Image (cartoon, rainbow, N blue to C red; front, side, top):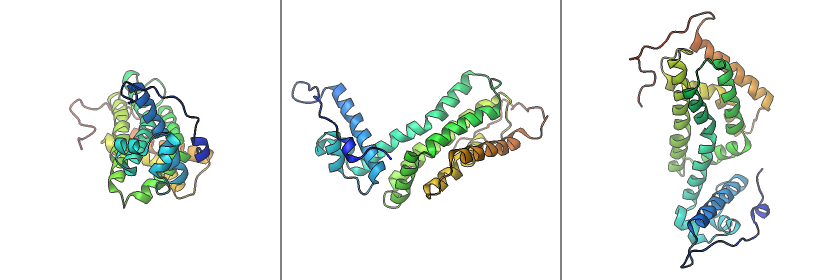
Length: 247
């Protein structure tokens, strides 16, 4: 999984320097991106403990003082890596919420939309890289609680709030009836990816066909509660009703 230390090393390239010997802004951005990419692969391939600043600096072709100046220590570097991965994992949710805001809920059934979203979440959050990060976080949570807090605050909490926005639009359109879209979002995420992600973290991965089948059944169970009996007319929310209490 991922690049080996040999593959990570690349041929040295000339880096544009500004007057005074410091990298130009574009060169610094390119250097930082390379540093994060290299650190990501090494953390995934070797784990947190076995990845050193020396190894990252060598593979990224930067000096150790540069790494320390930019990220402080290995925890800071891992936090930067984690933030970038979290943004990637959250992208499908943000896109779905944005699309729901501009398109009417009738453009495709609610079940089709949730199934499409669930499939993207499975692929991103139950893939090899996501599971590797989950294992690192589990192992390091006691020693470095600030890293675990980062994962909760910027990962899980944002996933819930973004999914709640998605459900807000469905409620406002009358497509769903939900008492609390935040709790609905937590329930949906746990049902769709929670079990599969947890089993994979424990080393008991499901094949994709089984995982998708479980996801589809979970969505139908979720909708059975959100839609009620077949044939029931949707109940539009009252304008003054709060669907997602502030937390």
